[in-house]
Image 1 (spheres, rainbow, N blue to C red):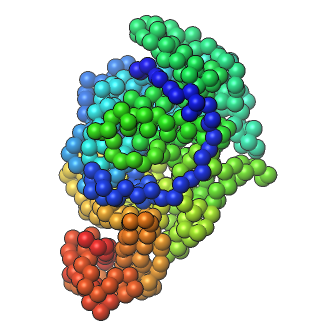
Image 2: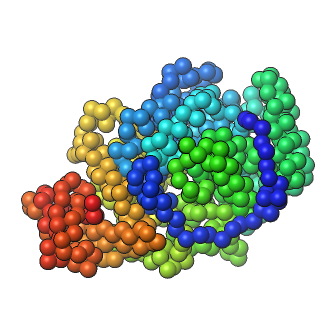
Image 3: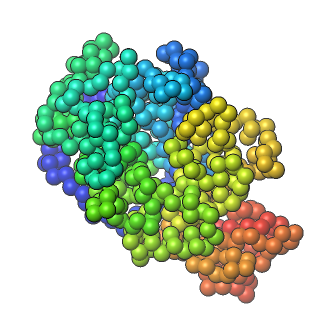
Length: 560
């Protein structure tokens, strides 16, 4: 990492700032207004997505892993390749969240089902380097630059709660840095924070303000790599300029902030957010905002817009219905939104999705507009890398799943393969390994038939909804209003500063028709030219109605 130069006075006051209203940047490189409140975020396990460089498949021998618990060959170049091919653009994606890219432990754990290696990225050994299994610093820079050139933001996955497990090849860090017991009981803030999530996962002492020296194992590694002096000089400069204690959490903050300053990433996804003191996320946010602004000043030709740094958190079991207060115990609550977060991952959609469309959409909209989360947002999802109860695990209803995810108020997280019906049940796999199979490119490219549908048909459906979201920020960020029950028709309207956007959506229209008549009175004026983003056809409003030439049972209307 390059040498840091900090403005001391700006960093001494680390506090959570109040949230600003929705920011809008109408003129962007992708020519579309972008709102994080309407983002379509693509979440992928780098090792499982796409292999763009066979030379880094197995730099360390890992041949004894259990099913789907070793390295599969995906890498950073593979993501970049798909950006260049237009895969994400065609899907309507405008942000990519990738699993942690930092160097992982080299050993393996053995839980009785076979060895597990750190293919997933959540077992860090060195936060200052890219893991050699997935690429290099040069690969990361190309990935971020390519994403930005294509109108796509990048979210890095931040792990400050723990190191990787202790193995025969990976010693435990000093006791001044980590605790190895007790195991979390989740009965209070203290028994959720000052404890280990699981056995043999050393917990960083994020509560400590005591000065600590660099772990000897990391010191030895850096010396062998010939970069000890440079890294120590950076640390000395950081702590001297900020006057922060050389405490464990500030080392980790500095190392994560390096990626913002060097690469210009747009935001962080925070792992295991409730398992550290909430206040540290406000500290991290304050530092990250400054580093992001520094990067933009130093790289005016690369910056996408003037949006602030973005942080979304994984507070396990948080739901949109919780509003801003999350119950850590029967008597203790934490407001993570007031501690550095712009949004939290909403864990309720994959279970709430059993309800009808309008019950979900209306409830979410009321909470986000004038309710407990006014001026904030959530990130909805239907499947993920560690959720044992995804919506539609058999992938029997991928069309309905897409509608409920991509048309729900709030931001949307597509987990890699949602759009191509990638299997979530894998022969021989155990636990969360089932959720982490390699991306089903062969099925998509060969248009395989699954559960009575064609995979490309599924992808096309997701793409149309994604393109609609990208073109119209009102879809995720607008106010929801039901217009009719049968057929089910609703509008979303968004008015903020110079941005006025509105859409009308009709779902479950009568089959067999070649034309659909949609009532848009009160939303669009007569004579307004509209595009149906599902059939890619155009119409004009006449007598409060839009006549759409389509045989589809869904219509997505917006001005064009």
